[in-house]
Image 1 (cartoon, helix red, strand yellow):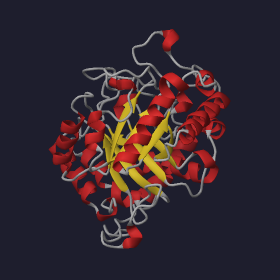
Image 2 (cartoon, rainbow, N blue to C red):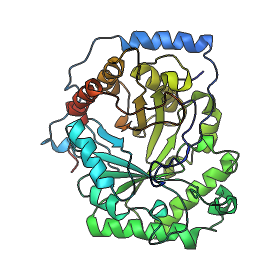
Image 3 (cartoon, helix red, strand yellow):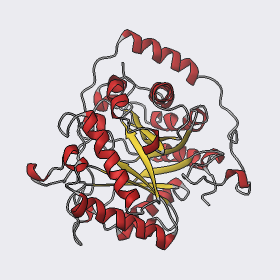
Amino acid sequence: MRFARPARRTPADSTTGQHRRRRRLLVTSATAACAILIAVLALRDASGPSDPADGAGGAGDPACRPTALLEPPCGAWFGAFVPHDKSDLADKVEEYEERAGRTLDIVYTYHDMSAVTETRLEGQLLTEQEQQVGEDRMLLLSWESKWWGGTRAQQPTWKEIAAGDLDESVIDVQARRVKEYGERTGKKVFLSFDLEMDTRTPDNGTPADYVRAYRHVHDRFRALGADNVVWTWIITGYLNHTDLFERMYPGDDYVDWIGYNQYNYYRCHKTEWLSFAQTQYASHDWIRAHISDDKPLMLSEFGSASDPDRPGRQADWYAQVPRVLKDLDGVKAALQWNYRDPGPHCDLAVANDRAWDSLRKVAADPYLNQPRA
């Protein structure tokens, strides 16, 4: 049974190798149980719209200020992944914000674990551009155990990371960089180690190897005083992987937020059209029941394909986001994926002016406009 992310993007390099190559799994055909659950969710999704201000706190309400772990108590953050080259992140974010009608709360970027150099920005957390963007926004840094474009021998494994083989050349360098950023600016960053790790085994190692690697990275940062990190564990949310999720969870002491990535792929992966509710509820409810009933949750990537036969369909899909979001217990951030996926019909970016109008209304909802300080 699945509600979504059937396959995984590969570190895709848009123009200069910035975007990560992300492998995706093939989707199994829908089962009878899946069809029943979709029908149930359709009824849940069909309930009337709620008051746009439900659950939203006023910007002047001290109770709505973010917590030490950057959790907004009265609503949720709105963020996005915006395609860019490493040298033009700030410009691309501003272009997106102009279309969305607001400043993003969180900007999502991706890095590999290549050797740190002055010129190879893929392996450098908190580039100059990211720090510029971070002046007015929060940053979610995704750090993958890959060397994009590197040789097979250069690809780090979880065993090597856990054994400390990358400490001196990579991990400690980045930990000190993140620490210095916090000391200089007073800012924290969300950091995800090996998002969607459920698609990386057995190539990178076993689930136990992953847990040891994650804990080692976490502990190295702590030992070096980089305490301005909000540790964010991100899975696909693909429900055929629930056994892997349970075996790859590093533990409550090592995780501050839990993220999952679910989409309406439609023709991209030859699935039926799924509403926003249908892409989110099943994974959300499973995480709450089996991983954590109290950690803040993040829709770390969400989005929809368009329907060439119904140009307004993507706009209608986004229009449902605020109401459903308020019904997802503990979801405190939603990050729109404004890019493509490999393959035909796989452009998941906002498709047309009508869809942008709809997304602007989402971004303007009071629930998604919370005080950042």
